Image (cartoon, rainbow, N blue to C red; front, side, top):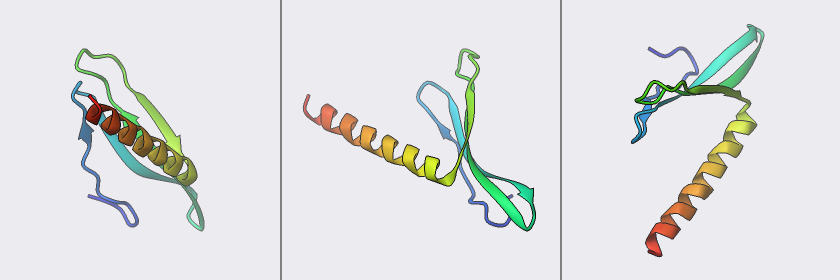
Amino acid sequence: MTTAGEVAQVPLVTRCGRRIEVHCLWFGRPDRPVGRITLDVGEDQGGEPGVWAALTPAEARDLAGLLLRQAGAAEEGAGAR
């Protein structure tokens, strides 16, 4: 179940078995809430621990742009083979 303003997310499970979840975290005073985007990369199939980060909206957009650029480069490189 989601709370007001939260977007329902389905976790991404990578080929190596890591579960990646993205959520919006709200904290602070009710009249001046502060929102962060959380990125939780769970443990791998071998039990190696994962990582967690909280990003500002601008940082999350920057990360999204970096991921999209790298995905495009990987696709272009795969097409050249």
